[in-house]
Image (cartoon, rainbow, N blue to C red; front, top):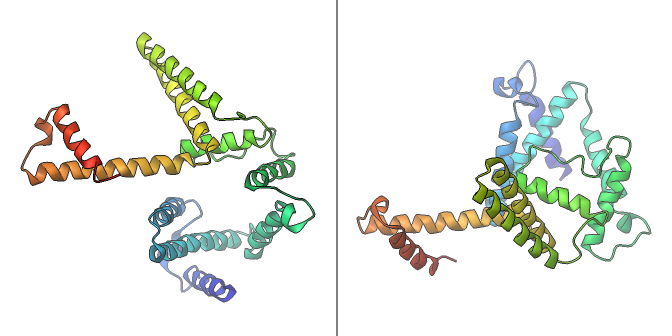
Length: 259
């Protein structure tokens, strides 16, 4: 594996050579690569979700290339050397897994996660004033919500069971209905956010990732909707001229074939 990484790093070094390198690669900066970096990350996620090993190995390679490019550019700027990246992550993994590399015990995965957050907070105590700091705001909102709740939960600020969350769902739904009834746009947006935040909390508490769950539901809807479109095209019908009742009838038929 070391040889593979060294080979990749040497290729990137050649691509970034000021005299003989690639014009495109030489033009890139840490910031200019961000859009491509994000795209490669999502392509990797898609390969994971599709359980496509062939594409996953390719996409992980593309993602690794971007990591190496970032390391190389930083090294050129004198920010750090490649070995520092590996040294830091190795030290972090050892420090945050005392149940593996020390004499601490952890009874389950949840305990490990809580210990991780506590150790992380201790490490960052001089940099951060709150346990909730350090969550990238640029991440998808569902992930931000779940990470926020995870961090709060690590110090015991959490519902003991899912029952109070269902009660909170009812409360937030009623508040949203009231805001809609009074036609208060700002309140409506706020209550929608509160309702979504509560649903994320329920998902987290049940052990599911809200972002992954919503992506799966969106994909399911897309697949079913395409089948409805196929039905109308096959029968030379116009979806735009169909009533909602007619569309629902086709939709229900499609649901029986696509779960």
